[in-house]
Amino acid sequence: MRIDFVSDVACPWCAVGLNSLERALASIGKDFEVEIHMQPFELNPAMGPDGADAIEYLSDKYGITPEQIAQNQAAIRARGAAVGFTFGQRGRVWNTFDAHRLLHWAGVEGAPGQQRALKHALLKAYHGEGRNPGGHDVLVELAQAVGLDVTRAKAVLDSDEFGLEVRQAETTWQRAGIHSVPAVIINERHLISGGQPPEVFEQALREIAAS
Image (tube, rainbow, N blue to C red; front, side):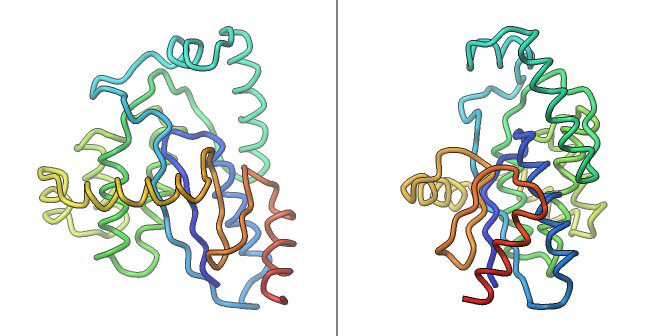
């Protein structure tokens, strides 16, 4: 079974959704083999390298108050805790394009599972620790932590390598109708939208596998 996980590192519901999907896969166990491919989507593609204050940016973008943002974040923290993801303070919103380039590289040149591990590390760094997922120092550190080649990671980040591939992938998913994330596409045919609970993912995966 092929699973394309379309998401952005900057998306809190993507952290919830990925952990939820992982729990569903753990429940299923070895009933069938699964390949997960991380696919790019940018919530803030025009974000500059210096980022922006999170509260101000979210208020302007969605037209909501700081109080509403706090309520939303409390709800997300609760959902994250339910699937084993701990949210911390995220004071700024950052550009994630270089993170997507590195994830693409990990999928192309990394060993099986390294792209998936890097995605988890990026989500934890930003949503759990408030670090800049577009900072090259952070990206190199996380690449090393999941066993990727550091020299190669630096070379990718210091160039525009895989930039075109990421842009093309983003365009492909948008043309396919993906306009919000996370979006989980099974076997390139079945779509599960949003950060669903583990049991929803598990039921869908079992039904698709049996069909």
